[in-house]
Image 1 (tube, helix red, strand yellow):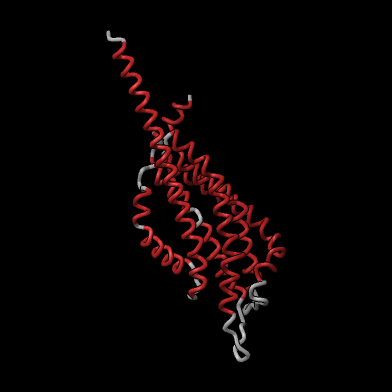
Image 2 (cartoon, helix red, strand yellow):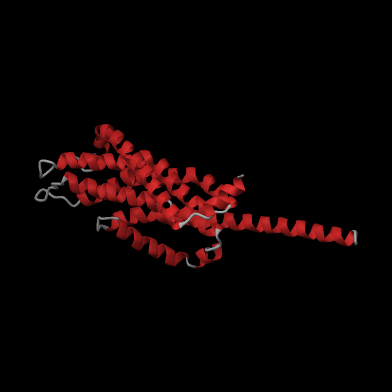
Amino acid sequence: MVEEDEAMERNMTLIDHLDELRRRLLYSLAALLAGSLSGYYLTPRYMDLLIRPVGKLFFMEPAEAFLVRLKLALLAGFILSSPVLLYQVAAFCLPALTKNERKYLFIVFPFAVVFFIGGILTAAFLIVPFGMKFLLSFATSDMRPLISADRYFSFLIWTALASGLLFEMPLVFLFLGLFGLVRTATMNKWRNTAYLGLVVLAAVVTPSPDPLTCILVSIPLVLLYEISVLFVRMTEKKKEKENDETDHLGGGAFQQREDHPS
């Protein structure tokens, strides 16, 4: 019965895939809306923590404070609904995966949620505060900061979401390793080039042009790259073990045929 279901999933037409995509998007939007509504009422509780690095914010337009709260509610919505969002992505990809690949996907799923939320929290409570502290240190008695609430939270939200996505890097490499698209030897060989690319990527995804913020984003990316190397090595060892078991079983069957010729 399971094999029949898998065969039906693999024989889905383009229209079926588009309908499935529409359904997954609707579920995702519903989860994001529910999370954002909950986040809207939770915003005042954590807003003080997010403002603490800059001390005081100002809004220049009448609706700016309200729009800022909506943006923070959306960020909270992404955090609260991330298990559902990631599940919908995984569920949409399931028909294209083998039974073994599905097993890996379900194992990796909890880590994907943890890494995404961890990336957001790292940016919100580590990267952005240190970056703001560095930038505000250039203030003088004649130059005082007058920071717009909208610009500050736009910077924070963009950095947090980008960090959450980048924290998924080890899991992406894990699946690339399972499909045989990357190897540990290649990652080790191009390590220095990868580090340079990660620094450039950090400079692109962080709205702030200061070097400290770029460095603060680059450090966890480098650590994540090394974790990715470990994950790929794990997949290679598992494949080697499976191949050894297959060879052993094949050799045993061949030996049995020799011992009992027809």
